[in-house]
Length: 489
Image (tube, rainbow, N blue to C red):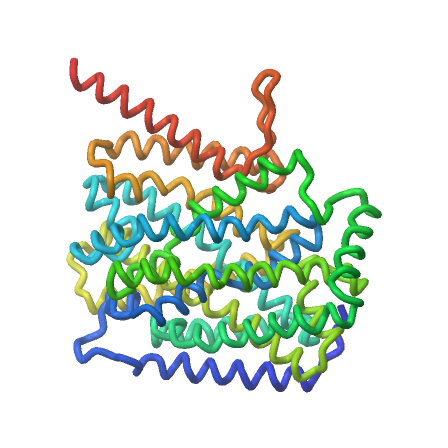
């Protein structure tokens, strides 16, 4: 990718960036209550977001720079395997429809703000609460870092080299999030989603016409995969199981993150969540169109320094500068919105489940909001440091690593809503063993999300997070039975 500055594109990018920055600061006044600011208002918007606001907010923090940068990058690198994100975004919505209204009702009745709050309320175990909270914060950090990877790719495409532009974008994000809380990304998400839809629709309509049509695009991608002897535009038989396990595991993990749960808890009612579960699949169409850009990268014969550059390079190569600037602004804002919600979600967890639980149990609601604001800044700094000094080969690996960890909290968060006989000790044992085994598998596999499991003559490749969850559930069941039988003696 060329690093020569494109001043027209930079001007368009800066104009839209300034627009959303103004919106971010103005959001502090939007729908502001008369009462003194507290964590419920700063972190959840007073739980008053209706269907449309929730739709844009959840879509804004669920369909992120991971969608725009990493999915096409994976499709460019491995082909059809990268399309696992499509079925996972379909699988997740029945889960949201059935489970999230129950979780919302529990949180609303008891004033819970985080999943760890719900866990403590159900089981009364500070240790289990701490384990869930710590896992949530650690799992969120690489996801925030992923958004900054997307922003860095866009800045490089604009010809803005070095770390200063990324740091400036981070500072602006940090300041308006500190000021406006969840209202800032909720408002900006409207602009972000409209811009992304325009950019993607233009891309899938214009780019193939410049490359000879979709037939030529698929043929070029197929030839490229055959030439390097890996990947393909169709799944191979030995990829069916790992593909399905990636989709299922990612779906189960998606709404365990603090940022997606923040969107759920900020909703006005359980019916609002159900309506969104029916409306949000519209984003899956967008996701499928975005993934096709990976194939278009082969047809355009791009020369890339990194797979993550495929989308920015396509826009810079095949579109006029003014539209490339518009598309880059959409991608950049698409990174800032979820990063803001993620930092707020992590800050809510820190304030409620670390600070209030162990440092200052009698903290006032106003002081809770102040602690959360500072925590949100610290979380962003951690993510920025990770990107500047700990780069990864695929941005997608970051999200899948965090996904493996957060998936292990599902039994503790969800089972208590429906099963009341489980004990905190069995859930904690399953969680810890799931985290330990999953981390060991990923480390031994070179930070890759798929583990090849061999049991005698049987072998299978599975998403590591789903494999760790199975181990988690087995340990949970064994410990539950052992403690139940021991209690009867």
